[in-house]
Structure formats: C-alpha cells, structure tokens
Amino acid sequence: MVIDASTFSDITRHLHGISEGLLAGMRKVVNLNPDAPLRSDESTQRDEWLQAVEAFVRVNAEVLTLAELLRALLAANGELADQKPARN
Image (tube, rainbow, N blue to C red; front, top):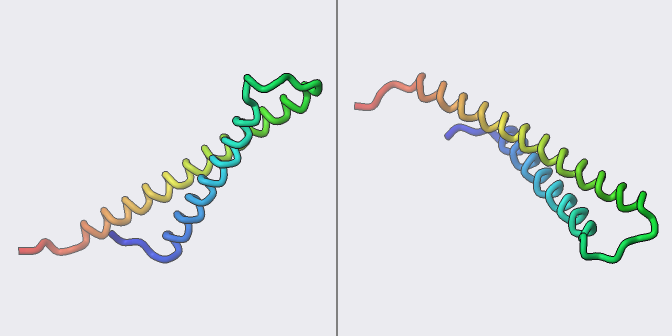
C-alpha cells in the first residue's frame, strides 16, 4: 500500500477529530439524561441539546473527509498497481 507522510498525518488528524467529536457529543448526551431531575432553566437544557447535535454534525463532517481521503488513497494504490509490470 502506498501512503506518504502527509496523507498519513491527514488521516490521523481526522481520526483524532472524530474521536474528540464523539467524546464531546457523548458527554452532552449523558448530561441530557431523561431520568435527571428537571431544571428550572429550560433554555439551558435546550442549549445543551443543540450543542450535542452540533457535536455530532462535526463528527459527521470529519467522517466524510476521512472517507474522501481513503477513497483517494485507494484510487492512488489502484493506479500504482496498474503501472507495475506483471510478475512471472
């Protein structure tokens, strides 16, 4: 498999973004526990929910970017395989 240092760094950076986004999103969702006592400030609960949704949207964007990078890597590897002479 062909991969250069820059591509590897891009993939690891996006994986880090994914894990951070998932962690942030999960923390927000845990805070929205339906069994928790109701708060007097309804807007705070709504803000936390919106922050959780935004965190998951960010994760989705990171996953899509990673998928594009992996598709490009796969295509590059295919092109390289096409260029190599067949072994006997």
